[in-house]
Amino acid sequence: MLKQLVFAGVAFLLVSCGGGGGGGGSTSSTSSVEPAVTVNGQADGASPFIKMVTLGVRAQPLAYVSYQIAALPGKVSSPVTVRYNISWLSSNGYVSGDGKTVTVPVFGLYAGATNSVTLTVGYQDGSSGLAVQALQTTAWNDANAVYDHVTARQNRASGDGLGFSYFLIKSAQAGPVIMDTDGLVRWVLPANLSSGQNSITSAFTGSAFLIGDAGTPTIYRQELDGRQVSLATLSDGTTNFHHNTFKGKSGWLLLPDMSANGSTQLESNVVEADATGSVIKRWDLAAIIRAAMTAGGDDPTQFVRDGVDWFHVNAAAYDASDDSVIVSSRENFVIKLDYQTGSIKWILGDVTKHWYVDYPSLRAYALTVVGGNPPVGQHAVSTTSDGQLLLFNNGQASLNQPAGAAAGINIAYSEVLRYQIDPTAKTATVTWNFDNGQAVRSDYCSSAYQSNGTSMLVTYARAQNASIAKLVGLNPAGSIVFDFELPNSVGCNTAWNAEPVPFESLVFN
Image (cartoon, rainbow, N blue to C red; front, side, top):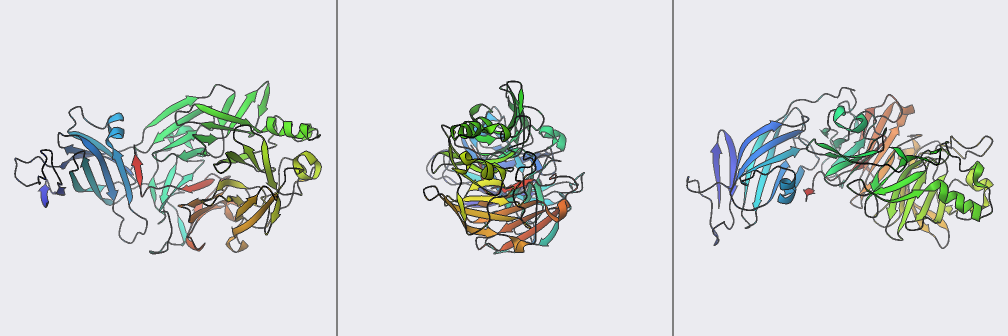
């Protein structure tokens, strides 16, 4: 039975199915029946994108509270939809001692707008209630005049088939930034609330951001309600974190710099850590490659060089199909390692570079590229839903090879490449590429990630001679459905990497 009640000028839709007394009771408007939910108040959160809404609920066991933010008129992105299971709300202090008051962090709001938010309370007896609440937010102005200055070369249209509506921008000048596919920022915190005032080394865990500090060996967890906690400070020689964070076998793959045995190991280590910051496993690429070169009869001293950025790891991904880790070395190649032993399975790269030309021990692991370009200065390795290798191919030759050593080729444009790897035949066949008309080049940083096994987000961190960052959405047919540009003043500061995140279907357990 559905009734509409009005309290203090706010409309509530109260729904009851089943009931605390058993036997299919219903809600009525009489004062003797306890409402399924009432909105008792709201307060500003840590940014204009967050409100804390207080609900009054029945004195009976709750199952969940959810909310959905309606899209503004003319906007195409799917509504932000979040479900908090009662265990999460209770463990985070959002349920009162008597169980009759619940505070709901509502994030993902439009800034400077009246947001229509539907809040639903579900009880363990199967009954539920909902309230439609207007939440007015203040305007948000980016102090750096970047993320509120989107130039849309192509806006998204309804019915375009795109498989995602939100993406995380990893920035050197702000905490994690969530933007929707209409080009509007939907979540960000003041910079001083985020580790190191940047989010370069960050990943979305499904309910929070995991951030490796760029200046210390500390891993942080940034909650979407605005809280930040320090998870762990690594004491095993880790000095700081850099580049990307990505889902591992049972934790998260992070990229630390190390200090060990009196030497500095720059950008040549991968660690897997769990959600508490505890290290599960570590791969020392210098030790792994030294051992392989020595076993193959080569002298590694001119290739593996402590204190020099000889490897420049910028991404790592876990491949469950053969229990392995795929590591991207911008200076050299893409290399696949056995997860347990660290032994080399194969190497994929530009065969005009130092590693292939001068070292038979490494050449023995090389795959032959069929039907397209090899990885050159690549970033953002991952595996697709059908098990192929995906990466952003920058096209930039090496920077830090020894004097006189081959630096490899330069390609005049950047592209996204997908390879089918045949480890038996030792081939890497290009099965698909997106070169954007060979009209855009981003020499460093950048990314390309698949979403829901179909659509893709492509990020050119340094387009137009590094003056802009360009974010492009591709639908399952590979057609461009949006093309946004953001100002970029230094390095890869604006959007060094970006990936889709499911703000349209989040569940907090």
